[in-house]
Amino acid sequence: MTLGRRLRAGGSAALKHLVVSALVAGAVAALVFGVWYPSPYDKLAGGQSLFWLVMGVDVVCGPLLTLVIFNPAKPRAELVRDIGLVILIQLGALAYGLNSVAQARPVWLAFEGSRFRVVSVPDLADQKLEEAPESLRQLSWTGPKLLGVKLIDATDPRLQESLFQSLGGLHPSFRPSRWRPYEEMAFELRTVLQPMDQLIAKQPSKETLIREALKGIDLDKVGFLPLVAENVSDWVVVVSRDTAEPVAYLPVDGY
Image (cartoon, rainbow, N blue to C red; front, side, top):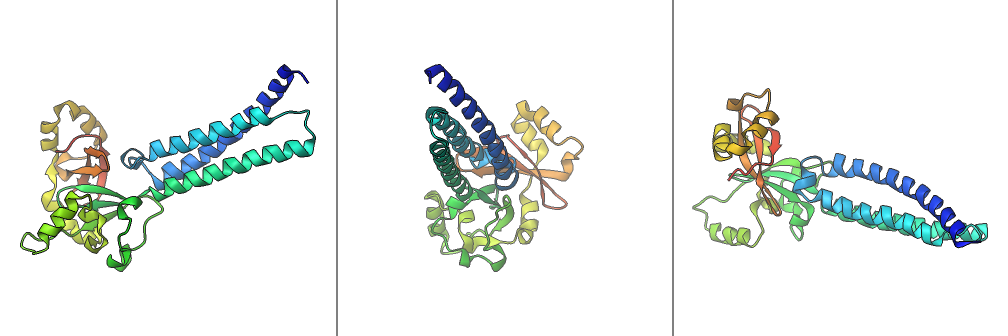
């Protein structure tokens, strides 16, 4: 068999493999971005970069290996074995990648005194979930849930230790013993919400973005707090003053 004929046959097989891989990638994207990392957490918690890394490797490598090994001159049993091995390798890589994405998923949007903080699974490494209220011990598989965080009072003798822990990256939101049902913190949340006019005054260049995102919402009936996540500090959460529920997330620096 000539090299050109072999490459044409391999290219056809690789193209079919690519189409199937792309369909699988679409299904995986629906799971990752529709369930584990719903918007805007795909940006805030690194979901996009993780997904594209996994899919880039998986979608490209499988068809590429098929192109290299496919040879219609091989006995059928040998060809089926070779393609089967490629598919097994591809599925193994996909399973490993999906597990990595799942283990990095965001699980809480925590109200932490004067801000909201995104809490992901790695932030809770080595923490004792049994120290949380019983209703908060299960980590979500369907996107972040709302969480309240009780801060230490300024007169508490543990305050200095708590501050040192925060400076070391162990923020109150990462400590299950501080977790409280979000509803219990609703009154405190309302007292610290900042007016939207203040955000517009701070960020006049973002006024159009803010008003478009909140079209149809009375700005006097909502307020904002800064939103922080790992390597992210230039977003805000817009919250209803009536229900204390978030109504929008905006890429605007609230500090």
